[in-house]
Amino acid sequence: MVRKFFNFLYKETDTLNQAALLLGLFAFLSQVLAFLRDRLLAHIFGASAELDIYYAAFRIPDFIFITVASVVSLSVLIPFIIEKDAQGEGALKGFVNNIFSFFSILIILVAGIAFFLIPVFSSFLFKGFSGEALTEVVFVSRILLLSPIILGFSNLFGSITQAYNRFAIYALAPILYNAGIIIGIILFAERLGVVGIAIGVVFGVCLHVLIQVPFVIKKGLFPRFSTKIDFSLIRQVAKISLPRTLTLSLSSIGLIFLVSLASLMTTGSISILSFSINLQSVPIAIIGISYSLAAFPTLSRHFRENNLEIFVQQISATARFIIFWSLPVTALFIVLRAQIVRVILGSGLFDWNDTRLTAAALALFALSAMFQSLSLLFIRGFYSAGFTQKPLFINLISTTILVGGTWGLVKFFYFSEEFRLFISTLLKVEDLPGTAVLMLPLGFSIAAIFNGLLHWIVFEKRFKGFSRGVIRTLFEGLTSAVVIGITAYVGLNIFVSAFDTTSLLGIFLQGFVAGVGAIGVGILTLTLFKSRELKDVWSVIKGRFWKAKVIATDPEIV
Image (cartoon, rainbow, N blue to C red; front, side, top):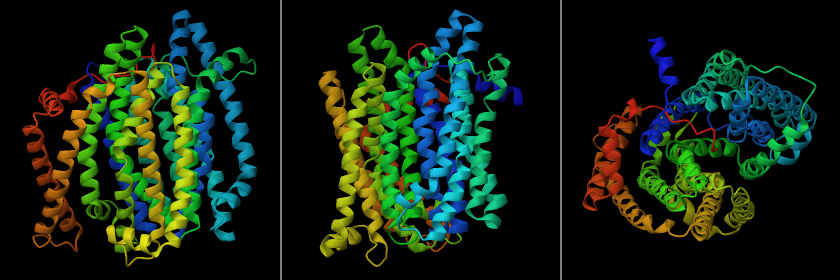
C-alpha cells in the first residue's frame, strides 16, 4: 500500500481537464483540512479579540515570504535547474548550493531585521489594538517569522521535485502544512491560546519542507552552505523574479490594508474577514489555480513554438472551463452562504451572529470569484508569453482601487444611513453590530472584478480573437447560475420545515438537498444549451480522470 502511494506521487500526464481535475482534487483535500483547521479555531476562539491577534500577527511574516522567498519560487528556479542539469551534475549542485547559500543569508537577515522592527510596524498597521493586544501581536509575529524561512527552503526543494516531474510530492505539501496546524491547535491552543496556533504553524511548515527532503537527498542535491556565492548567477535569477515578486507583493499589501482597517472596527472584525477570505478562496484554489496551472506548460510551449493561434485557442478553452465552473459555484455560495458557514464553522464560541456576518462577507467575496480565477489564467498567459510587466501594472492599478475604494466605502458606510441600511438589509444583517466590516469584501470584490476585466481587455488587445469563443460560455454560465441560484433559494424555503435547522445535521441537509437539486436543474439547463464544456467534462469523468498521470509544469518552458 505504501509503495503504491509513493508510485502515485511519481506519475506524469496528458490533457488539460485530467490535469486540472487532479490538481483540483489535491486542492480539495488541502481545503478539507483547512476547513477542519478553521472549524477548530472558530470553536475554540469564535470571532474574538484573541483570534484577531493571531490573524493580524500573520500579516508581516506572510509579506516577507511573498517578497523575499519569491527568489526561490518554482517558476523562477525550474528553468535554471534544467539548464544546469543538462550541463552536468556538478553544475546543478553548484547552482543549488549558490541559491541555498544566498537565500539563507537573505531570508535570515530580513527576518532578523523584521524581528526588531515588528513593534513599529504593528503599532502603525493595527491602530485599533490596545497596548496589551499589540504586545501579543508582536510576540506571535516573531514566532511566525520562522514560517517564511522554512517555506522558502521548501520552495527550493519543491523546484527540484518539480524539475524532475515529481509534481504530486509538492502537491501533498499543503495538505501536510494544514495537518501540522491542526495538530498544533489540538495540542496547544486551549492551553497557550494563539501562541499554541503559532507553534502549530511552525510544525506545519516543517512538514511542508520535510516531504521534499527524501527525493532531494536521493538525487544527491541536498544543498550545502557556502560563502563563495556566484553573484552573477544570483543577478540572473533576481532579474527574472523581480516582476513576479512585485506583482505578488501588491496582493499582500492589499490584504494587509484590509486587516489594518478591520483592526479599527469592532472586536472580531479581523476574524470575520479572515474566515470569509478562507472560505471564498476554495473555488479559486480548486478552479482558478488548477486550470491555470494545468494550462501553463501547454501555453508556454505553443508560444515558444510561435503557434499563436493555438496559444489563443488554449487560453480561450481554459477560460471557458473556468467560467463554466465558477459562475454556478458563485450562485451556490451566495444563496447557501449561511448553511456553508454554519456547517463549516458553527460550533463552540462561533455563534449565530458570527455566522450571519461571516456569511454576508462570503457572499460579497463570492461576487468576484470568476474574475479572480480568470486573472490567474491571464497572468500565467502573459508570463508564458514573456510579458511579465503587464500583470504588474494591472495589479498596481487594481491595488490602488482596492485601497482607495475600500477606504471610501467604509467612510460612506459610516456617513450614509441609507447606504448602511441598504447593504445590511440586502444581506439580512440589519440587526447586527459591526456590519462596517462588510465594506472590506465589497471593496475587495470591486477591485478584483476590475482587475479581471482589465486583464481580459489587455489580453484581447494583445492576442486578438480570444473572446470569440468565450462569450457564448459566459452567457450560458450566467443563465445557468441564475437558474441554480433561484432553484437553491426555493429549495431552502421548501426544506426549511423538512429538517431541524437548529441542528448541524439539519442545516447541512437543508443546504445539501437544496444545492443538489439546484445543480441538477443547472445541468439540465446547460444540456438544453448543448454546452460543449459540460460534454467535455462528462467525457473526462467517464474516462476516470483519477487514473490519469499527474501533470507537472514543464520545467523547460516555465
